[in-house]
Image 1 (tube, helix red, strand yellow):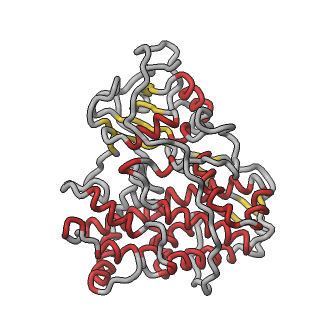
Image 2 (tube, one colour):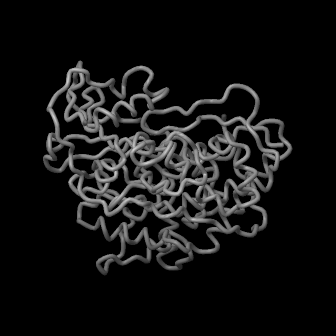
Image 3 (cartoon, helix red, strand yellow):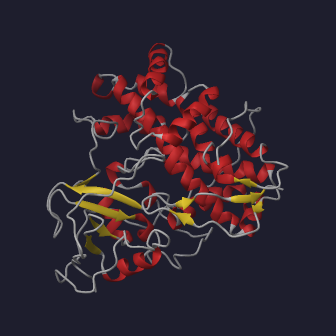
Length: 435
């Protein structure tokens, strides 16, 4: 996913938001395995119909309004950094939603927002901007932010080229076929970490045989803006060819874009391409692992989707709601907002918002037929995640390929690995019996 949340990519060090060192929380405003290289793709398989999640009942998203109330409270909640929170953050999330919808977590160095309506408003509020690590596709110094996003959005909009869909489906079947006949396999290392990268390679129009090389970059060092020594040098010859001989791919679309009547500079195009690759190897891979884990926990749903593949999109949306791969999205206050001072870091807790009982009935349950799973994991407003269509296509193609090729797919016997991570969260392994 092309995710502008300002979070590190897979393999990059996670920077804790900066803030005042503290010994106690100041509560404010309480409420009432090494993967193998890919193999050559087999012939394209027919695409299957998909059902888009039904529209969210959320109305227009206004600016974030901090709740009113007393300015301090003695029984401040635990910090996100306290022992046990990373293992299971949901008890703290429940406390925050109920009693501390806006609180300064001093050890973590950020103001925490946890309720669904508040997180949604904060993500769309222009006064709360993503951290600015430097020039990039979403942080241009020349004011071209909106134009650059429009160019990417047009290339990744609904109705992506049929060749892209066929390529992703083909790759998903290849990866699934490599697991057929095995007694046991790890879906995370052998499927989830490969398919999103291969999908991004296909979307960008890069050579399929370079997938292993790109995968290694994604696993060992791309940050959330796609920066990696050597990646720019790798992409430059492809950019030069696309500028003179464009094709039907994202890289060509970016090279052909003329925001403001001028082409995007090579630095911007390579930054966008690196972001697509970095997000695929991190955020989308983690989302796919949680998606498959949720369905493997409900074998009856696998049989249902095998019979009704059009339910795949709803299953994906529900997994993103219940177990978003990015749990915490940082924002920086550009001006004072209630008790939040200018320059402060605000942490939007997607993991808490997605399980808010004020927004979702029985929020901890994975419900394939939930009518309103929402789209909060993709952000809101001007920083909505542009790679959402590609991520959804990857997940749908991946699940349907597994169901086609591995009809007996089930969890392997033994303890079930728990999701891990505080900022980014997903199962790190997913042992299954493919047959």
